[in-house]
Amino acid sequence: MTVSSADAASAPLFECVDVSYSYYGRFLALDRVSVRVDAGEKLALLGANGCGKSTLLKLLDGLVFADAGRYHAFGTEISEDHLEDEQFSRAFRSRVGFIFQSSDAQVFSPTVRDEVAFGPLNMGLDPQAVAERVEDTLAMLGIAALADRAPYQLSGGEKKRVAIASVLSMNPEVLLFDEPTAALDPRTQHWMVELIVELHDVGKTIVLATHDLDVLPLVADRCVVLGEDHRVALDGPTASVLADVDLLHATNLVHAHAHLHAGAVAPHVHPHDSGHH
Image 1: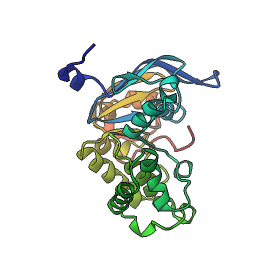
Image 2 (image 1 turned 45 degrees about the vertical axis):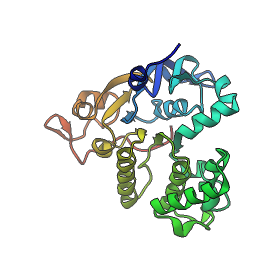
Image 3 (image 1 turned 90 degrees about the vertical axis):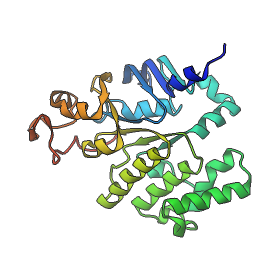
């Protein structure tokens, strides 16, 4: 079966159809969730803690596999069997990058330079090409001076930049961010939002999980809202999602006593408190 270029262009990069997932077969995280992600999108997965948005990101990255339903990426079904094939896995991992909420879960090499080189070396690039890519990535993120430092010596904001550099050095098409602005100081939050916008501007597809409503208009054109029943409550343009005050209350994204005006979330509304997923 051949696929025309027009069909390929209109096909989603990612497509989940009725996917369900439970941890240890008992703790429901996703219940018949359907989501598509098109090339070049900025998509936010919204929801209160524990609703399943981090799990959905892990599923998109092939870190967990649905108990039911199906998931296709780049036109191919993603399954445990497929990702056990080394060639397939390497190709998939080179196209999708995941920035975890906790940099400590991601950064493990002796030095920053080693960390940023790890992915490209595992992709099989020659050492000279890797060295050039590492230097370019460190410069782009403003952390060249940290190249020989050990990750444990870094501040939280510096470690976050290193974690992002370790993903960007592989030049993936799709970037998955789990709570990118959580636990960052205001200056680093601002830098993070600007970086996401810049990465999108150069052609990256962005999918991020967040409950930070303040940054949504900048980092997402479309939102998929997950309710506390682990199902999709709404999938629509960011502006219409933010204007749906009843939905934001129902999905615990704003507190019931939050001050609202003009049918939209006031800038000073504080979303649901941060925590573990």
